[in-house]
Image 1 (tube, rainbow, N blue to C red):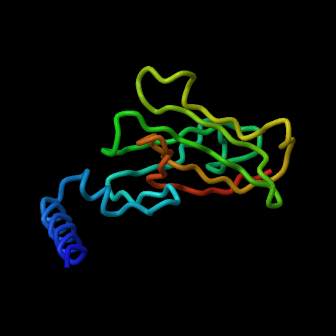
Image 2: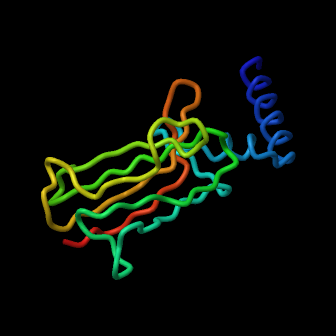
Image 3: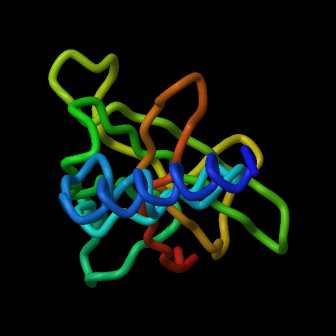
Length: 143
């Protein structure tokens, strides 16, 4: 009986909270569980080509991202690139005032000396001791 009461109480609190529609409640309600992925309708991430001459990303060039989120004041972008299934590049950048470094990513590395690769950028936040992914964008890097 006590277990049923606690379950009903928890469900009532959850339903009452979700009707408030606050961003924090919506973020918690859409959490992807233990995998660190959060579905957040109020976050966006898009590729910006900094040195492209043809509107495509190519090996050796530089990119950045336009980001928007109301989930945190301290968002990060994590870019990972894979060639033939092997990770050949990874970079992190803080997209907030005071973050170390700049917001530019080079499409190259010591392991990636040329050729095409598949890249995915994640908009991340660090909360409660874990990284959480808000949204992502993927793109092809041409040779």
